[in-house]
Image 1 (cartoon, rainbow, N blue to C red):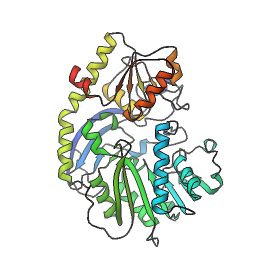
Image 2: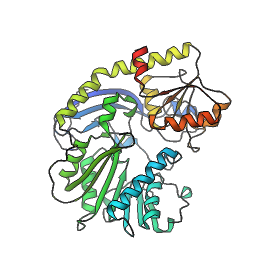
Image 3: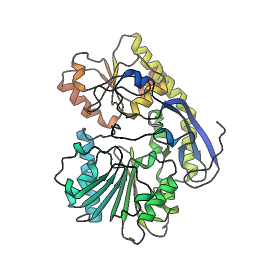
Image 4: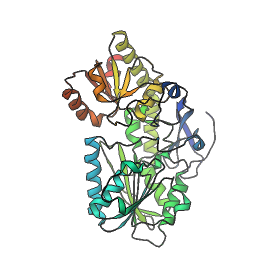
Length: 401
């Protein structure tokens, strides 16, 4: 596409597109009750572009008006022991590092409230969480009386809600005008020079390096590397304190506080470095996708029953980008709220793990490799022994590509 627009992060017009997919579902984790509704789910386009000036990556075909977040949005990872262990470790680290005890915590994009609740429980803090997907009936914490949840998107109208610590996890990637959003957060901290903000988002250098096309989807309109994220925060009046990755380098974290910009941190790459990684992704992504198509269709010809483990955004992007149908039987998810729903775009059923007992798979494709050990334990408990393939398995491309 030849659309000429300015970078939503820095305002420059040095923009180059490098990856495009037509007609992907506009939501990936909405609970869809019938296959017919899943097949007819609204779609939009991906036109992923790179800002040569600051390194920001974004979907320049994104239309925010097409998204409608509600309590039907089922994003939680809180049914995984692997994820919960990470979540608790992160909460304990933040509490210890910033003495979050008896403090005011604000979480923007709090989902079902698990992390904010944990911070308030462990540190005896008070909290305010913002998210239209919050479901009150699913929070039975003894700290609930110290937390107020607002079932709405955070915006300028809530900038007067101040906290000693502002947390925003897995939300900035859903925001198109990232400069305005981070600027709003900064203004909410006026007069609070000691307040700290913590953001967590997907790390785009891993996506580029793995050729992880399944991590590009419509809801995620904004993608950051350490360098591009730090540059955004400095432009909006933050002093960047720390940058790091966690969760098998899938998540990028930033800590900052109001103040003048300090020199860049060592982990911040220059835009030119990211430009080379973007070019490498663009050069090999078609072979990556062709390899997966060939591998799955070969399995189908061998009458192998293939299932995806993980019924979320990665599965939707994987299936719709590859234009798959009965090459894959279904998606499995341990979140009981997803069982009995259908994946947007392709209409694949989402089932709980126990459903595999009645119709055992020959191949399980693990949509997020960090859960592979957990998945293999669940399969072993059910006395199932399929071939288990992580989504990033290079052997598929080498053997079948």
